[in-house]
Length: 428
Image (tube, rainbow, N blue to C red; front, side):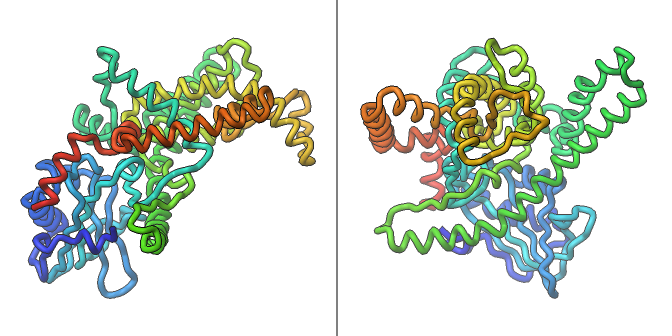
């Protein structure tokens, strides 16, 4: 469905006299609330998000636009409100928040989509990427298990809840990045300062530098991804509409790379914490022979799919991510000889600095359990192993078709109760 089809006639204001960006957001939000499309705290959450992640969009002409919106948990049914303003009001530039943008056209988005679309606000998009998607079959049962552990099931540490508990400052992505960077800096630089191999001045400079760098990452990366998504979503929607007209009414999704997922604050902050955890796992896991290096930067891509499954709960993403990485180490140790053999056969020359390494492996490919399962089954059982793989895929597809809504809910899509709330609102 295109955004134009979601435009709600009752939520259109023409030549409105709003005197500020706050006032126009409040007016449009109230119209959407009256139609049952959004929750009561939708406007408050939208204003809170606008303060930290503005949506002013310079169009290079006489008129500029703004697209205020908020996390999908505040949406009951998808809708779009629109306002044209008699006099421009000031929004902040979505790319450069220090720049003021005089806006006379405002689109308020209340979008709600299943699965990863719901969490990442990617309508009509699926993520079949081989680096990310294999984590889902591990994460779904682990998330189900955490739901049944007393105390643990009550962990609720997503960015919005951090703001509600500790105030808007601590839930701000920049502050979260600063805190994580300072903690990691203390862990990394303090031992050297205490042992005398470096000065406390080096410790302070290194720690503060890391905090500032990660704060910048938490601010800039989401904005870079949002700009990328603004270009990709119209293309994906057009491709999906083209295919859907030729697909006999079936719903069609467009597959994109997992790179577009890593801009979410919950995913970035969890991945930053998981970097030292991965290094610690490489030291303490019995039998491990893998020394991580440049591939640490791939961790956000591997674990991005955990975002919707855990519904942005940072505590759960870190917990499940730790288990997924631990399993990945055992997978990597097993598959490393095969990867090295293939690399050598392809003419890859191992650098002299890594000549002491017996094998090579990567997190992006070597920590993924699915290729190893294919490899071991086909090598040990031949055609029988291949038939087992085909049978397993057919069985998985069969059970999915029996109850797709339950499977989608387990992967972060709307639950049955949420859908029951949506239906009467859409009927109105």
